[in-house]
Image (cartoon, rainbow, N blue to C red; front, side, top):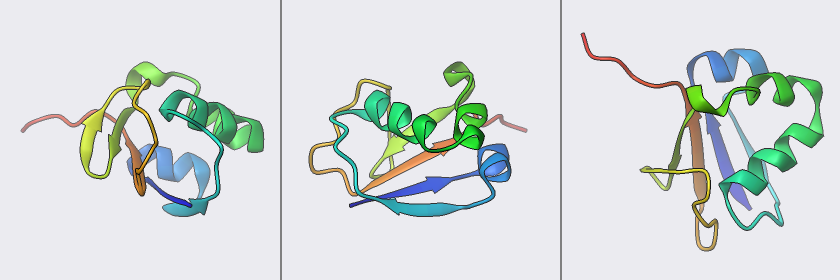
Length: 82
């Protein structure tokens, strides 16, 4: 089981802030593909992966990052300074 966290507008589009998911995905890309196949709202939330940042166990990672031994994945928009 992987805990998936959603922040900011990703959370708003999905209507949830987190979920537990049993997945067979080997990496983040496969996880996103699996999520997209669940429901139309996931397709919309993950339509443009260039504007989503990903963290695995609180470490920024890319879309090819392997999920082996990962317990938490977070999706969020890029952060800006101010």
